[in-house]
View (cartoon, rainbow, N blue to C red):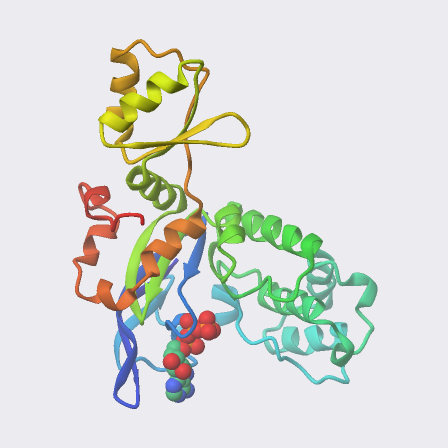
Length: 322
Ligand SMILES: Nc1ncnc2c1ncn2[C@@H]1O[C@H](COP(=O)(O)OP(=O)(O)OP(=O)(O)O)[C@@H](O)[C@H]1O
């Protein structure tokens, strides 16, 4: 488990991470989302003790990372793709890192197998593609079988097969009980990979919630429903009178927006409209994310605690979809 507690980091007097708190829990993949320059890498570096916070604390399994007797067993990280001497083979590189932690050669072979680099283990890492380098970085992070993992943009440079592989790997690693923090710009991928999301903007926490709940809240405010009915003209009139809009879609369905889900279903039931389909359209995480970070300057003035877990009715205080 990783606990980030009230952490602030300033550069040139300007906070790039600002009183940030969140917890990475074991057993799930937590996505770390935020626009460029929002402070994700700086936060990850503070978790690893590579950057010192100006205030606040980071605990890895209850103590600062630097105080762990076996730091590689507590936390594995992929944060900088440049690693090792370019003239060394992948095997030799991993063996050198393993030796610093008293880890044997059999584990080196194991992690090479896990990341799919066994066949190229004797090749110079200087000739590796970005995707192979990412796999090597993951292998290095896994050497000591750590209880927590942080991976900064791990799917950068991976082809579609590699992305699928990485998704399955991180979910398996979490299912085995590890706390996994994963940053990525690809929201569609994050929606498939992460169970939970921590969203930051300008170094401050914007949301800390289950991915499904972020998407659901966004849908709840967007109120877009796909319907199919043989009584489309009648429904169109009713929707219009109630203040909503109904548009015809090329596939023969109709899209209704501008009415609350409950109001639309009451309207349909009370007028006996026959339905062949009624599908509230799920917003994607991409949409929910875009909405959340649309103007993180604006968020700085809002009561963002409304978006944190354990708050009674967060949906009410969500910003509305455009
Ligand atoms: N060592 C440093 N000295 C000065 N400013 C820095 C330093 N490291 C980071 N910054 C600044 O802090 C801000 C946050 O950067 P950071 O790399 O943490 O963001 P990020 O969310 O990881 O961005 P990206 O997604 O683009 O990698 C940026 O404005 C960056 O320029």
